[in-house]
View (cartoon, rainbow, N blue to C red):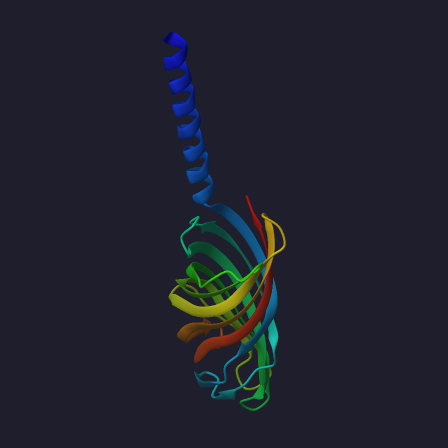
Length: 207
């Protein structure tokens, strides 16, 4: 009788352990991502101490993120830091210079479906502009103009390619927008829009 009851307990314990382990696997987990690519800042009208219409050469974008994959759910979330930059072509009487920003954003992703090792996705992010600055050279009011704060947002679409259970690559297109900015410097203030279209590739590692 005792052995029969013990056998039942052992079977029940094994079932509970198995279901708990399966549930734990389904919970997903943390991952780290690093990425880099090309950023094309949108043309913008400039007013204030510098007046003109600026367009930009293709520049770099780089960043990293700490993310969480919600297991069997198609949703993921990331806390991201990014830096992007673009060199203005000559405008406003010979002015040029690097227009750059750093941002901290919270991103949400929806993984559409998995096809073998490839998963397409879409996403949206919003957050805070930690710094934006334009080092204007030449023209009538050269100098460093900068600002902090304000909202930035982005939309993205891409694919993840799973190399193993822990390592994968991503390829992504995104549109980033920090709105119209008034940035200040020793020569006064200038107002300009800051937005970019970007193509990036990334490497991620799941814990």
